[in-house]
Image: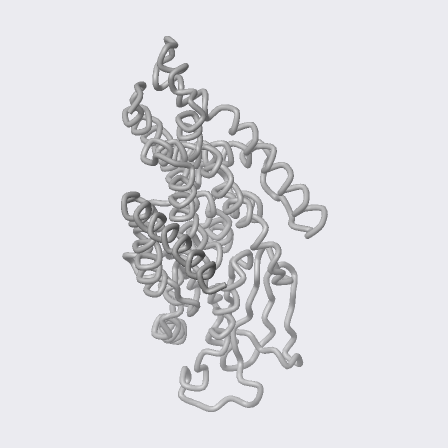
Amino acid sequence: MRVNAMSSLLRIRAIVSKELRQLARDRMTFGMIVMIPLMQLMLFGYAINTDVRHVPAGLLDLSQSSYSRYLTAAAEASQAVDFTRVYHSLTEAEQAITQGEVKAVLYLPADMGRRLLSHADFPGNNGYAYPSQSPVQPVGQWLVDGSDTMVAASLRALRNLPFTEVAGQAYRQPVPHLALVEYFNPEQRSAVNIVPGMLAIILTMTMIMFTAAAIVREREHGNMEFLINTPIHTIELMLGKVVPYILVGLIQVVIILLIGHLVFLVPIRGGLITLFTAALLFISASLAIGLVISTLTRTQLQAMQMTVFILMPSILLSGFMFPYDAMPEPAQWIAEALPATHFMRLIRGIILRDASLTGQTADMLWLLMFTLIGLVFASRRFKKRLD
């Protein structure tokens, strides 16, 4: 019995030794074992922040009084918002929110000082009215993009700015404050924000995974010899690998949007042509990443590892789970290099706010440029010969 046990242990040790030697020879896998946890822990530990700060906001100050200047300074002093735009009409401010220029607008009416001192009636936006007998005494409004639930929740604290110090006197209770008008998602349902984001994440995962193993699969299945003996050019091979998966990606878009609309009641406010144009650009960019990965790796395992290496930042840095504006600038630079970040802005803007493509040209051009660069790089990396 003891001899059999010793023999079993020796065989196990031999297998363990063999596996360790294989890992040591496979430099990419060995590097992934060390670099994936190290880089992602350092990056995400530094970048992820659930405290929303420095939200880009606009200012519509029709009062132009000492009261309005004090409230504006108090809002910026909270570090919750940065006033990056100044607007001169309510229509202009609402359009800016729709196009995603800003996340919120502080609206201070022309007679804000009188309202502040007298608690006069305040005509709210979209037909709401607050009579002087009401316990709510707003003297201005925060117009907020409610499709971003985390940002909207953080701005609720700015409704109660220090009005008691504005006029140098104590007000009768209740102290007047700012009304909060949440556009596009007044019920603050999480699904409205999550479902469009899930579209970006699911497409990132599947499109990169499908094409990451494309060239590697040809090599492992012994089909590379066949490709070498054909007159096909490398760029033709790249495009041939990509086109079938574009159709697959569009089918996934339809499935996700249908389920989101019918089951989770997510509104689709934008036009379908606009929506599918943005989706087509993102699918192409993701497939280009997969092709680049397939030319850098030698096995399907390595391709899957590199897919995870791209997927994790796409989930955590693109604005899907954590507010983009809450991340430090270096993390935002990394996020801007990810196609998912640009598509996240595009798809949420189109689906939830009916934003036009002309207002999101930078994100569209970036996805197109990323696709072209990825295809060129992959075609140059691929060598139509046996290693």
